[in-house]
Image 1: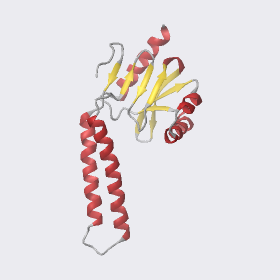
Image 2 (image 1 turned 90 degrees about the vertical axis):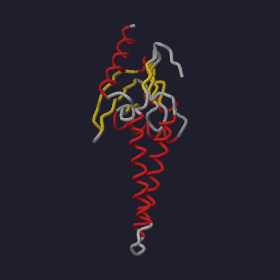
Image 3 (image 1 turned 120 degrees about the vertical axis):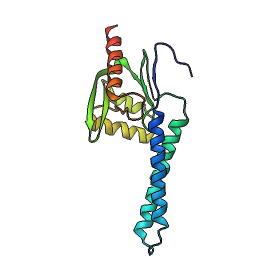
Image 4 (image 1 turned 180 degrees about the vertical axis):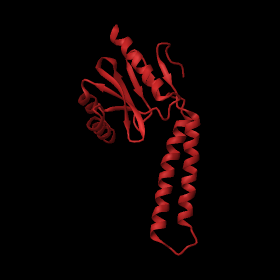
Length: 174
C-alpha cells in the first residue's frame, strides 16, 4: 500500500505480535490442562480452564489480525492522526482541534494522551456504543478521549511522542 510522501506511516511490530500469539498458545494449553486434569472433577478447574481458553482465543485473534494486515498501526499527516492500535479505529484527530500532547503513566504502561478542545464532539461522532463508552471513560480518567499506546508499534513511545509533537508544532506554526 503506497502512502503520500507527507504522510508518516508507523507499522505494527511483527516480532511483538508473534510473541503474543505464542503466549496465546501457552494460555490455551493451560486451559486445556485445567479442563482435562486427571484429578477428581472440580468445577473451579473447569471454569478456570474455560476462562483461559476464552482469553487465549481473544489474544490469538488480535495477534493474527495484526500479523496478517498490511495496514499501518498509526498514520500522521497534514490533516491529523489516525490510530489503529486499539480495539477501535481513532481518527482522524484533526490538528486544528489538538490543544496539547502529553505522556502519562497508567499503572504499568505509559501512553500518549492527545488533548482536544472539543472532546465531546469526537465522542458523539462515534457510532459504535462500546467505542463511545471507552472514549468517554478515557475522557473522564485521562482528560481526553484519545490515548495512544505504542506497545504494538514498531517505534518506542518517546520516539512516537517526539514525532507527533514535531508534526503538531509544524502545523501550528503554519
